Length: 277
Ligand SMILES: C[S@@+](CC[C@H](N)C(=O)[O-])C[C@H]1O[C@@H](n2cnc3c(N)ncnc32)[C@H](O)[C@@H]1O
Image 1 (cartoon, helix red, strand yellow):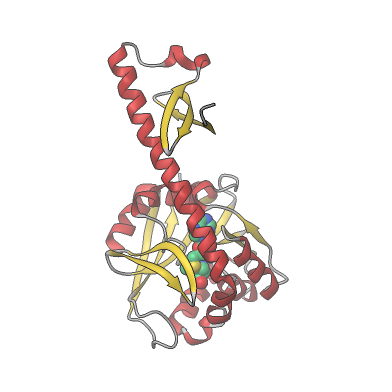
Image 2 (cartoon, rainbow, N blue to C red):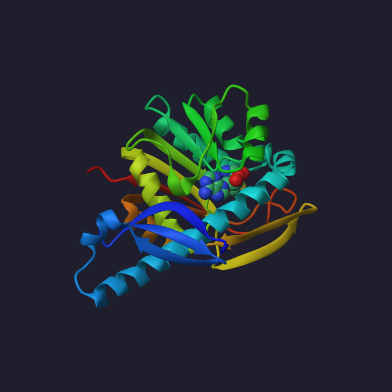
């Protein structure tokens, strides 16, 4: 018998629902019969629709693979990451100052999410300033560290690419190095999701490494990893945030702190507010 694996995903494209079949690594898309009448008329356009949809399916599959590698990699390094990074804010005065400003504008105004929280050092800093903050991360082992180190903060497993948070539920999002492993083409999905879950006027504070390159690491702290690290141009990120429905309030850049404090890259921080609509 031929081996066939059906991807249980329905995707909406050309106003049509499709089911994906993955066989020996290649993906094909089949319009569901109930929806077939909604396919564009004419065989030419139907084929084009199918090809376009197959491209979307391939991209979806790629995203799933990338997400799987990221989760596995952070699961492997979670203990060491917590040991090395949890106290980092003690040595980063600018980061503390920016978080103080973020806290002053979000405390008492509703829930705040520390997105891709890692071991929760940023969530803890904000919690100590009276912010109603919870952490969200993809990596279960990283979340174990976060819960161990911060028993009075709630941490949830979740994916920034498919946020299970209600529309307009949050007063703020802090996302320090959350996008460091995310390919550029996936950023609109993440920024779109952030805009969706923020209330109008809600505040985002994003931190990332400045540059325009991808660094491929096969090993970190003695553990094998399989993910890229992206350095990003601030102008590109500003543009992406504006396209997702944010107004940029301020962009701050700094040189790296000493090598014993952090990786030697220039850093950028963006305060952006979801536009009132
Ligand atoms: C470089 S660490 C940053 C952790 C923490 N924010 C900090 O500043 O130290 C990146 C974190 O993003 C998480 N992450 C990566 N992709 C994610 C996704 N799609 N959804 C949620 N978390 C994700 C990883 O598990 C990891 O904990």
